[in-house]
Image (cartoon, rainbow, N blue to C red; front, side, top):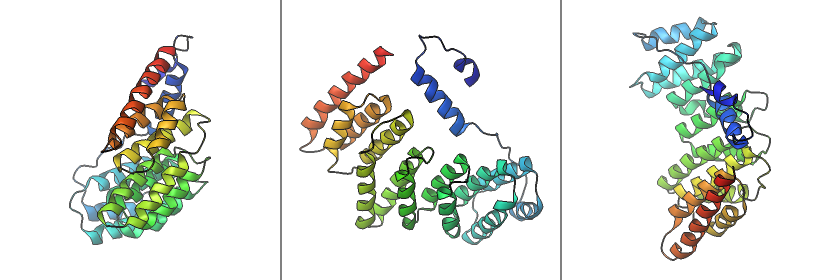
Amino acid sequence: SVAPLLSRTTSRFPERLLVDIRRLESKYAQEVPREIVGLTLPEARERLESEVTAVVLIDLYHTIGLMAGIGHEERREVGELVVSRYQAIQVDARQYAIRCLSALAAPETREFLENVALDRTAGANERVFALAALASIGDLRSVDPVIKYLREPEFPWRDSASWSLQTLGHKALAAGRGDVFEKIRDAYAFAMQEPVSDPEVGYTLGNVMYSIGRLNIQGLTQEIIDLVESSPDAYVREDGTHALGQLGGDGQQGTAGAATRRARTASLGATHET
């Protein structure tokens, strides 16, 4: 569990590890929803229209998300019902409503999810689950709001925006939308210019570089090398090294390989220092 680990605050316990654990706890710790066995979709819809108890709503959202084989029309109707009740339900249940929308992936809920993601008054968990839901829907019109999220330094857990852009980038490639893919590339290039002022920025930049590698985005190898060799942040070094390995194609193997070896040496040095 997290609590006993956090109680170990001697000078020999790495402070960065404590930061990592606290971040993971705040981002991912949540109620464990239970499936309502035997519930049919019509019954779930009927209960959603009147249920107000947060715990029951959480289980309802979870159960609907697990239902397989729901047709497009049913997904649209249930998605619109979840959206219509969103403001009326308790705050504790809202992130589970967003997760339900992510599982449904109804295109009709896209604009609502974009608004939740960019709503500064919404909870952090609601916003990042909205980003994930936009990736699940896969509408390339969501690229612009997701990029906007990535570029806002005060927004929480911006690595989630990078993850969503990676998914949308793959969809842009599959659809032959080079213009959208170029927009994503430019957003990642812009993100790499941000100074690593705190660990949260390190998480974001690490995922940006990881995504560049996964999308095989060319033309940013030197920027990654510079970050990997200059940054003291472990995530920047690790994910940048991974990206260099992904990008090591013809004509780049020597440069990327040398940088990867230097980055690994630097990362090992940073690990020993802690």
